[in-house]
Amino acid sequence: MINRKSLPKVLLMLAGFVFFFANTVHILESDNSDLQASVEPNYEFVYGDFTEAGLGLNLKSAILVNYENGQVLYARNADIERPIASLTKLVAAMVLLDKGTDLTRLESITKADAYRSSRSRLRIGYELTLEDLLVAALMNSDNRAMRALARASSGSSDAFTAEMNHKARSLGLTQTVFCEPTGLDNRNVSTAHEVAKIVHHAYSYPKIAQITSERSRKVTIVNRKSRVLQMANTNLLVLSPYNVLTGKTGYIGAADYCVAALVQNSAGAKLTAVVLGAPGDKLRFREIRKMLDWGYKHIYI
Image (cartoon, rainbow, N blue to C red; front, side, top):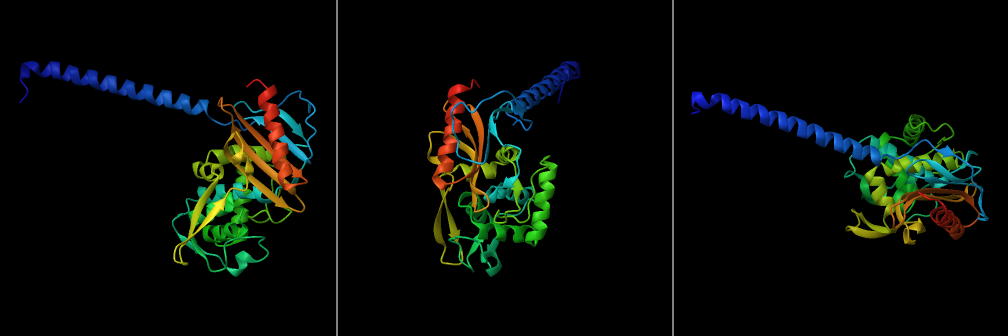
């Protein structure tokens, strides 16, 4: 039992402890808030004076942005709408994750998923977790996987596409429109400027960032004796000296070859680059490397 004479001292000590704890929590919360603010991506881009400076890029449109402050370092036709092919899948992945869909669920590839789906290693009847389907869709740009995810998430491709368009509007993307979730339809359009914003938003999703920054990952076909497939990242920037934080490739005839990425150099500086409409597969990676190399060499960040 506490002695009555010592009670005031005990109460005083308790009061002091409560005061100290409350202020410590306040300080910790304030510090955490400041930390979050310091790494918050910039979604408002600032255009200044810049020149192509002999880059001689072979593409239809492009943009290079300082991730930290939104300064546009280079742009060509950055606000002209163009088909974006499988860059579409970044927004589709955001919608899927926003819905809190259970990624441990299983889903099978159907004939409808396979119809005019372009090349795929996922055969009709293959059953995978939604997580592995997401890996196939983002890393290997698999259209069958994306269709299966849309159906599993929203019941139909049309319903899922409507949610994608709603997502685009909520992000302030006024020139981005989707007609289906894979990017195979040339009516899926955006601009280099808005694709760069999509990349910034995608990076805020740890799952998207993790999948799109890896060189490869294995997925399991659970109803084929747990057969394992190795999915390689179609974004060859992951083989470059730069650390790819997130990104995506895309190709259909109407769009030509596209690639978008947020990368970080050895000093920790982050640049976002978008290439739309390059006339060759390997060429798109050479052109985006030119932009990134130029940006890191000539721009003080």
